[in-house]
Image (cartoon, rainbow, N blue to C red):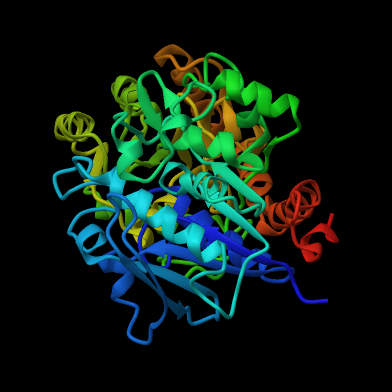
Length: 486
């Protein structure tokens, strides 16, 4: 029997373009699933993607649809053989900036058209009208930019099993009511039971409504988003999905490159017990960020600099951390006020706090390898990857007890969890880290525990493969190939 065919729809893909953790998931999960699925990825044709498309073959064309321009779809293969479809529409995707924002960080004014066009093309691909040589048995969409795929399939009468993964419920793709006509959505869908959300059209809500099944990136987050506190106004709908057994949490993993023994980006690769190698990475980080030589702990922060990520808690606790003998290094990009505030406190303590606005994967890895502790003070965290990266590289995370952090940090064994997103609670976790740093035997025991965590994608991929089969078995008209996997 041939492998079940899966179309994985994503606005980010780490091989080409990254904004957040979705890109890493989109590159790693399909590869982990290739052992049991014929899985293919589809992504918009951003400039960063087209730079890798010298050998692309066109597989089909999409006609204009209401206010959506025509587009074509091409196919490339990554060096390791993963098939990637690319939706080509220069007017929508070939721009400077990020997938979602212009170079000044403002949302593109036509994001509704951009991602509706992407979703509609992916739905055509799923329906078998573009690539005549391949048709999926199930479609797996991710976050609001591809959440309309299940809607387009439903609106056109195609009974193809669909899964929508919510990586962050806070980003919903909200647009004016008038967008429904521009994207060829039926006007009778503008109800509170379907796509209407407080006088707006919600792309994410449409996906939740029409998808066969909804997943999130940790079991804890799946429970949290069905509550008023974390549900972002969609908690009622999500409670219904949970009661229907159509809401599942599956924890993310990290790829095998996060191995301190073999990572080529490190100044000195090291293994469990080789604390000299870890110190050599710490020495590099201190020199790179212009910090003074120190015998105190080094705290790292590698994150998007956004209010939900809790960097204001780090800023508020920074002076006390420095006074206690600690040093802090920060790298990331995000909200300009937070960037400015962190740079300002660095200028006040140049020997103890280093801030680099921007992101470089190799530098991030060296920070994880060199730091003793990693800040993870997120107010909410659907899954989080940095705490997993940190543990693999022997940096103990200090995380808020929420979402995936509570599932991946063993309090007092591989890191520290604090309750409540307050400065006092966060600094309580920092104080525990200082106390542990003062006991070399305790510190090294926790490092060993942390570095022994695998966080492999194998478990997550197995759970998704099982879910694909279960969803297909419950979907009328689905392929017997997938149903037989249930």
